[in-house]
Length: 166
Image 1 (cartoon, rainbow, N blue to C red):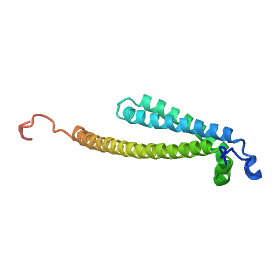
Image 2: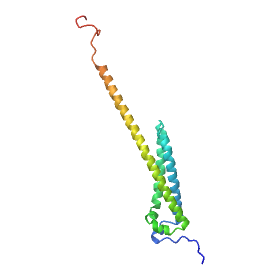
Image 3: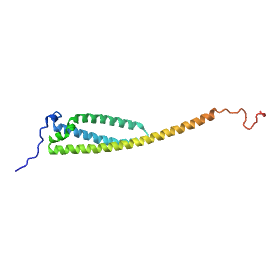
Image 4: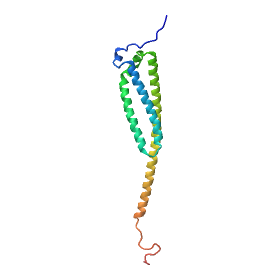
């Protein structure tokens, strides 16, 4: 008895509306590449965050926002298949199912790393904000003291003279 390689089955009617398995895998591959880019941008963000110039950080954040919008569109396309993933997996050939599971696992790992990096960056920014606020408060205190000395009335004449000698 010979065993033939398992072929992809036709998707159930509810899943068939999604699209063919190769199209879904294409979207997953594209999404995986997007998560790889997102992770690369998160690493670059850490380096840019430590620089004094905010312009590169703002440009990088705009790039991340654009990429995130694209990933959101891909997630919306994949939503019907993900809602019925167990059924959809049955439509895939073994190699396709393995690839899909690998892509999903790697994307989850990348997302976890990006979120951890973003949380650390948020802590760095919060500490920097607190330091700037503290510096501003100290500056305001010094300015208030200087203003108080500048507006204090000065006695007329020499300080070593008594009122009667003048």
